[in-house]
Length: 204
Image 1 (cartoon, rainbow, N blue to C red):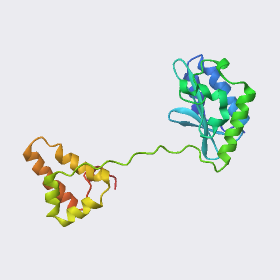
Image 2: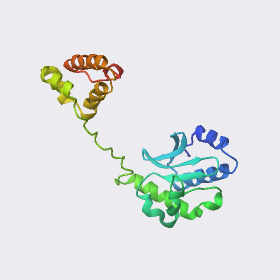
Image 3: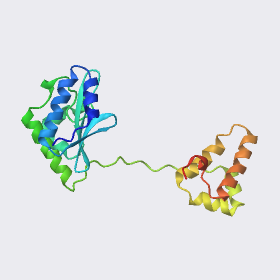
Image 4: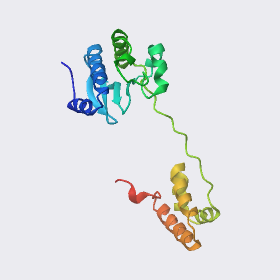
């Protein structure tokens, strides 16, 4: 039994006329190639899950549609059909009609291979790596104040680079000497209590 989602029906119904047959066709192929696929919505667009992982997804825009496989291993499987991916997000580039799609036989082969990859232990799509925050120079007045307050200094040194930067930026961005002095005193008090700069906005 197909695991459909009424939200996908609504999405297709609201799409442009040129997109509707494309979306319906792709939807049918996914369920035919992977009967266990389950529909859902991801990032406001229809998506298909299999084995608890994203299998593929589709989307419609003003002048084109897209269809994409989630598993990074599909890049090698698609071959020439995946060469258009640079034209738009997704695995098959810009799709403006059924003629832009690979033959059904090829699509079913891709979908079945994507399902096999989801069943395997091969990593799906690595999360983007983020560069570690670069430490900002500690201003002289803050450094001097920390030397006189052990608790505040211990907290500051124990914080992550991003947390330390928040205090440094808050103090150095003060435009008036009076404001800077007040922020410095507040920072020391908060640090002595083990609090990060934005502790008021953190959830308990």
